[in-house]
Amino acid sequence: MVRAPHAPQASDPADLPPDAALYVELALDAAEQERVRAVTPGPVWFAEPDSEAADDARVLADSHIALGNPRADWVEKAPRLRWLQLASVGIDRYAGLDWPVLGERLTVTNLGGLFAEPVAETCLAGILALYRGVDVLAGLRAGESWSKLDVRPGLRLLGGANVLILGRGSIALRLAELLVPFGCSVTHFARGDGDLRTRPELDAGLPEFDIVVGLLPGTAETAGLFDRRRIGRLRPGAVFVNAGRGTLADEDALVAALASGRLGGAVLDVTRQEPLPAGHPLWSCPNVILTQHTAGGSRDETKRILDLFADNWRRLAGGDPPHNVVRWSQGY
Image (cartoon, rainbow, N blue to C red):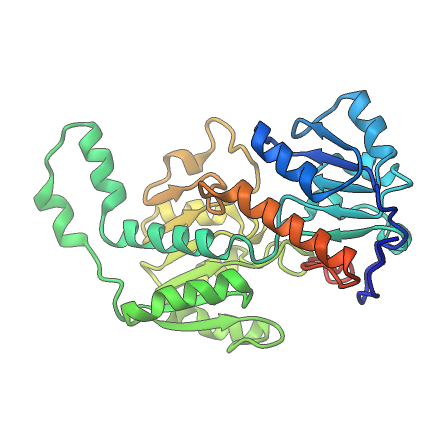
């Protein structure tokens, strides 16, 4: 039997039989499917992402392990399920389940830390694009418009910028590392170990920063943190970046600040509605770069997900706790 020691605020994926049944809901090619089969000795069922098929629901209900992001109601009704390895960092889809009860039998692990490098690089790329006018120049090329004299005077240098990063997780720390060689001054806002730890400290400091980057998890505490009042406290010309959760900011207030020219730009990987609906003002708002929730992507993304799954399986088989156990009481 595969057993794991107790992880605080989470169940143990105990009593998994050696031939535990695995349900996979990922888009995998034949070679990737073979790799999954090689990791787990029991039967494996492959379903398409976001499946609604009754057969898939039935198989999940009889499985001991799941890899992917199946429907929350299916997870809740899968009595044999002991371990769910999510194919995401976010857990919003499952937050409404009764975890004080469900957590007694089901351990959930996510992809925490897996996307630190690509998300940090996307944030940096978006900031540089705005500072160096790359977004404007790309649009001018599409219209075959040579506007050197209009663009050049407005270009900015990232060197010496004062940057506030909301959060102190793996992405936030990696982004800080990328910014330091540019000569940026980096400050973290984080409840436990930030340079700024409280909302009054945040409010007092906001006007000092040239760039504010949101990398916070989606919790009740962070939802709406950047409301109209805090957006109004941002320094004129500041750039706002959000690659955490779309619930962080009041988008109407953000659009108004951008449209008026008071803010210098925004890089948004996440929005409140995804996909962003046609006609939404963010599509046409000036100085906005929308990266469409691609920041975590890379050519080897699936390989790295399977690497983590295989490592967690080996850890469980060896009696060690898996990586990235979700603490439902904390919301991440």
